[in-house]
Length: 458
Image 1 (cartoon, rainbow, N blue to C red):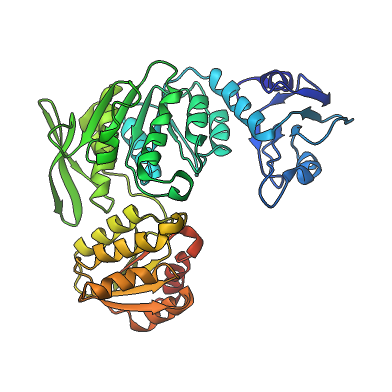
Image 2 (cartoon, rainbow, N blue to C red):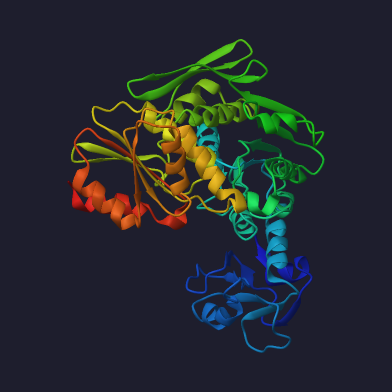
């Protein structure tokens, strides 16, 4: 934070200072009462199960200089207590205050799948010639985004901010706080569809990222996504299409694999640049195309940006490769949706291997009442791929197997009761040269299968 005092915060949140020093400088926002960086303001979040107001005393004891509260009317003491009506609303206003002190431009990134990877690719491409601030961890939500904004400084040249949404209205609200100059829309899937009703409604909601433009901004739209293209004129803001189609201003052409790595030609007007990626997946070609499009628009030399992208190796639990005594594990367990699971299965199908191609799949969450159908569709998709074996964990994952069997897929399908059963089976049966791809929603904890195989060291 830039020279923000308790009094500044009181004014921004329309609160009341119950006690403490109004001139106290606040440097950080804390939502965890167990940690303090010094001169923090603690924001007690009221969750479904826990009301963090009960941890205010603990937060102040370990070093927080101030706290918000929506439950206390009177307090005494040296630490600052700020009375507000709603702590999350107040957190948003603190984020808005912090952003108002920062003059650098910002690029927002949203979409159903690939937000974090695209964010990192954009940051990597821009960092070739600019000093870049980017969202850390997964601070992309109604709670996380204000914390991200509080960490920005004017020492950077540009910010790349990831913006997510779980419920209607959230994306527009946090985009407004972020004050964006550009925004990238990666794709539309069915993640969180239980809260939105349809993919069309999800798409319309994604376009509310333009509430961060405040009258002026530029959209980068995935031209290969039919829904995004369908609603491209929804907001009235200017846009640029990127993708593989002829209507895309920034295009990926001649996509191929060379020595196990994806290569493509990045084409814009009369310029063509060869790009080599170190991350798996055809979908990452589109993510890289978006990154280079943004880089070009902000004045970064595309050739230099493309070279920087070659060094990007992805994230833990997102298509991460592990070599374990002669066989390969591709851990993609960070999260899952139908689109990302299909993309991951394509990675497995196209992977060069001397042994078998084995998929370990678990349930995908937050798909609403049609969850069985979405899993079935993944199975129908997988049935067409050259896979050798599939292990399924979870109630809905069984519908993947149902579709595979009804399609008479050559792939052997095994349904496991627990993830531990799948891990034990693999530990006993995986062979040198095999490739094992693991994917499910994070709550299924299939990452533990990778950990087991690494510890077994077969």
